Length: 370
Ligand SMILES: Nc1ncnc2c1ncn2[C@@H]1O[C@H](COP(=O)(O)OP(=O)(O)OP(=O)(O)O)[C@@H](O)[C@H]1O
Figure 1 (cartoon, rainbow, N blue to C red):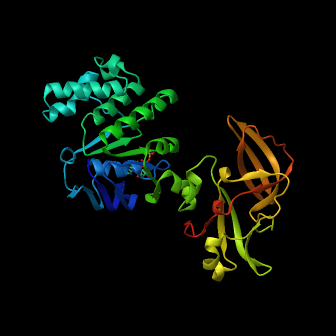
Figure 2: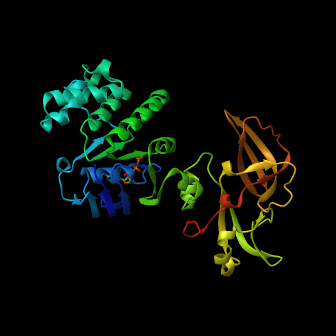
Figure 3: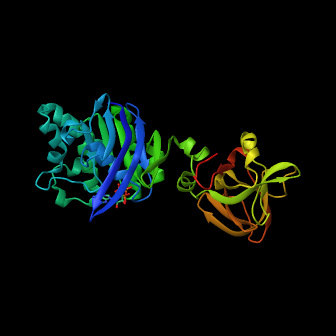
C-alpha cells in the first residue's frame, strides 16, 4: 500500500527518425489504497503511462514516486509494483498454479503461505478447475484471468491492470468486475486499471483520469465527469449517448445576454453562475453542451422555464429501458433520453427542457469549460 505520484511525466518514442510524444507531461496524485482508472481512446498514452510506472519503459522526463521513493531509476523488480497484461505474458512450461505461485517463490514466501494465497485468489477468479493445466490448454479469457491472479497474489504496493478483462465474454466480465472490486477493497492496494471501456471504469474505479492525446483532460469521480465535465472531450467521451453540442454566439437580446445559434433556432440565457464573467465577451462564440439524460421532452410547452428549445422529432429509437429521441431544433440535432414507457412520434412538434445546471459552456479554442 502506498501513494503513487506522477509529476510532469513525459514519454517520447523515437521510431525511424521520428519523435512520437505519447505522454505530454502528466500530473497524477493517487492516494494510498485508491482504485483509479485511466480511460481514453486508443493511442492516447494509457499503456505508455502504465509501463513507465512498472519500469518497463523509460521515463523521458518527469518524476514518479511510490510513497516517498523516487522510482525513476529503479529496476521493475525493485519497485514493488505488480502488473497484469492484456497479452497475458504467462510462462508456457508452468501450470496455472505454478504461474500464479511464481512471484511468491521468487520472493521466498514460505510454502504454506504460498498455497493459502494461491488458493484464495484462484477461488476469487474461479480458477480452481484449471490449476493443473498449462497455458496452451487454456482459452484467451482463462489465460487473462491467470495473468490477473498472478498480479493479485503478490500483494504489491501498487497494482497495475492493463485491460485485464478485454478477452472475457460479457457475463464473465460482469462477474470478474464484482470479484475484483471486492478483492481490491479487501486488500486495499493502490491500483490503476487501463481501459477504454467507460462502463468498466465507472463500475470499478474511485476516480477516473480521462486521457486524450497524451494529456489528462480531467481527473475526478463519476459525478464530476458527468455533471462538471472539464473539457469538450470529456463531455463527449464520457456518457452514452454522447453530450449534445451546439455552437452559439453570445448576443444581447432586449438588454439581456443570450446564447444564439446562427439560424436563431436556439436562444438561451447563460447560466446565472457565468453571467458576470460573460459580460465583456459579447459577440464571442461558445460551444454549449447538454447531456441527453439531462433533457426531457415536454408537451405542451412549459410556461416560464427559460431553458427550453422548440423542435421537431425526427427519429425515435427504443433501446431496452430507454427511448432515444432525436429532435431537430433549426440546424441543431439533439438526442434526448426518455423512459421506455414514453411514447413519441416522428414529426411531432415538442419542447425540449433541461435544468440550468445541465447547460455546460465551453471555450471553442481551448475546449475548456467556463
Ligand atoms: N514502442 C513504441 N514506439 C513508437 N511509438 C509508440 C510505441 N509505443 C506506443 N507508441 C505510440 O504512442 C502513442 C500512445 O500509445 P499507447 O499504447 O500508450 O496508447 P494507449 O492509449 O494505451 O492505446 P491502446 O488503447 O490502443 O493500447 C501511440 O501513438 C502509439 O502509436
